[in-house]
Length: 54
Image 1 (cartoon, one colour):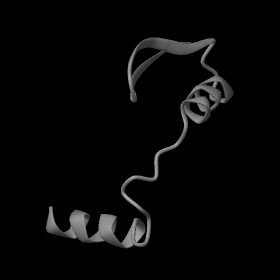
Image 2 (tube, rainbow, N blue to C red; image 1 turned 180 degrees about the horizontal axis):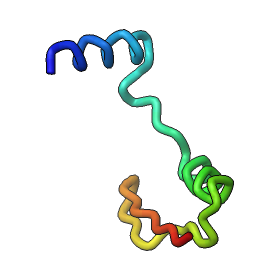
Image 3 (cartoon, helix red, strand yellow; image 1 turned 90 degrees about the vertical axis):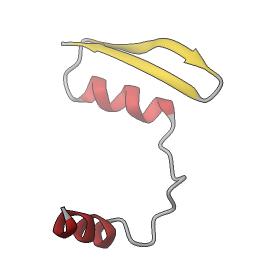
């Protein structure tokens, strides 16, 4: 695990741990990847669950 943890640290070095992609990014990415449906099924404040169907 140590090697994986080290590699992760290298890949994500300098990236803020709070750098979150907006919901629209996730939905558009799912649709671009071929999901026929992609939408929010639950939301509470900043917590969101999305659903996709191929």
